[in-house]
Structures are given as C-alpha cells and as structure tokens.
Image (cartoon, rainbow, N blue to C red; front, side, top):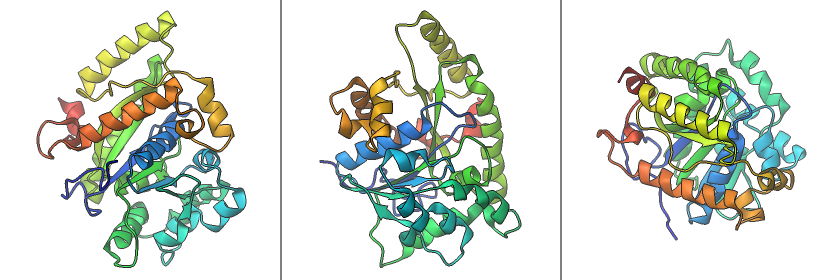
Length: 301
C-alpha cells in the first residue's frame, strides 16, 4: 500500500505540506465530473492515502454519491466554511463509510455563497485561507490529497476552488462543443494567476462517457484529442472513462463504483486513472511535464 502525500513536491505549487489539492472543473455539466472526483478519491483511499473530498456543488451530487444524509450535510456543509470567517475547515469535515476517506458535504444552501460573498473582502481566497490554516495547525490530522468537486459554472465557488487548488482536472465528453468551455476556463485561470497569485496547474483533460462501439464517438474522440493537443499540449489522459450503467447504480446506492462493483470495467478504469494521475504528479516541477505547466502557458504554445 502506498502512503504519504500524493505529490512530494513541496513548492509554491504545493503549499499544503506537499499534498496535492485537485479541483475537478468544467463550465459544462453532464461530463461525469462528480463521478470522477468521487471515484478517484476512493481509489486514492484504497491505495492507503488519507484523502479529503469537498463537495462545492449546490446540487450536492457528490454528497449523495458518498451516502451522506441531508441532515449531516446541513450540519457540516461547505456553505459555512466559505461564508463564516471563524468557521475552521476541520469543523466541516465528516467521515464516510470508506476507510481513509473524509468528506465536506454540500446542500442547496451552498448556492447562497455567491450572493453572500460578493461584497466580502478576499472572497476569492476564502477556501485557500482555510486550507492553509488547516495545514499550519498542529492540532489537525493532515491529508495526503484533497479533491474538490466544483459546480458546472465559473462562479465564486469555482473561483475559490481554483484559487486554493494546486492542480485541476477537466473532464470532457466526446462532443464537438467540449472545448468551448475550456476557452473561458483558460482565461479565468490566467486572471487568477495574475491578480490573485493562484498557482493552479492543469493536470490533465479526462475523456468521459466514451462509447467505443459508436463510430461517431470514436471519430469525435480522435478530432477532440487532436484539437486539445494542438491548443493545450499533451494533456489528455491515456485512460478514458466509458459509459456504464453500473456507475449510476452505484451512485444511487451511495457508494463509488470502486466499492460497489470493484470488478467492473468502470472501476478498473478509475484505478488505472489514479495510477496515471500519481505518475503525472510525481514528475518534477519546472520541467515540461504536464503537471508543471499553467493552462494559460499551454494555450500559448
């Protein structure tokens, strides 16, 4: 079993004791963003790493997928973490039925954050400050990795996640419009780097809901990969997540597919993706590795 931080690069890009903070973000919904976040969190936990998953989406799909009740979500949700200056990160954390995996749940009240924070000073960096305080404290048990499920919009919740994150993963489907949202995302990340001192890097683009039996999906995937590599560089993960009914069934039952159907094709794919992700994070910061290049710089190449 592997233990310890997912990334051992304790640098500006990894200010949380060497741990990686990964945001799953895409302006468009329906791209298996939540599914990928939850299952990768479970995959890391199964490897022996201590993992925290944060639900930053008011739809609270990650909360449902991990079997956290609405009552517990309201008690310990990210809404309080972002809107209450004296509400510490550790107070929002709850356990899950999965060993090594803790969670900060969400509810529909999280949508109020955009209105509540709009007049607040330092509103974009609220989550980053809470995470840094958590890792500086001698009283908190630290995590090797933190994974954040963002809403399908580039609002203050997503901005908080991207400002706090060391890396981001962008799930996309095999559709012609998949790159439209990435242009806006690239502009936002460039702004966060310039104006707020964010250090988030693009870790990879994950192709999801792929049906290899469909000729159209195969054709679009080839075109999509060519276009992504042309505009962003070699960022597409080799592992693809195919369409699978067992994933939806597992989420409805409050468990990641890795636990409910561990021998399924989807479960194996997420385990392979976890291996690929760790390999990317392990590359040295500062070289031409995928983990070291800002999205804005990649688009300029």
